[in-house]
Image (cartoon, rainbow, N blue to C red; front, top):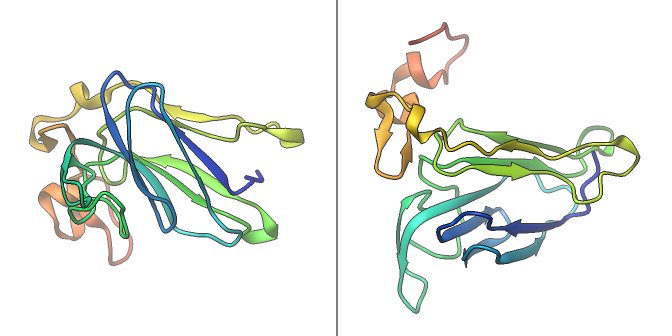
Length: 170
């Protein structure tokens, strides 16, 4: 897949979404039907786009969000706090290819689709997690506005898997 480096974040939700993107992008408030465009340079890696919900910011861009908060600022400089559904991408990587996915590694807060607007000859297509899966969240992972991941909720090697191979969990 080759992405052009121009990203459009479009809100199809019936509620306000405070879009965020790092390492480039920042953040914007989006009502249903609104879009936000930003450009990511070739070589961008470990990049994320996510939606924040139930936010409240002052005129200086300081405040908080119930899900996906990034240090209490509108213009994100770091990753969002779980739970937040993620669109992840890396541009011009191995063999000059772009890589992208949707992840719930940091939990789930909103439905999302992600993909190229002009698929081109590779016939890549958007990927999506458009069902609101918050209702399927196990009770122990439920938080206001979303579903946390087990690492955030329980911690420890068993759930965070940060030090080598890990086995299955409940």
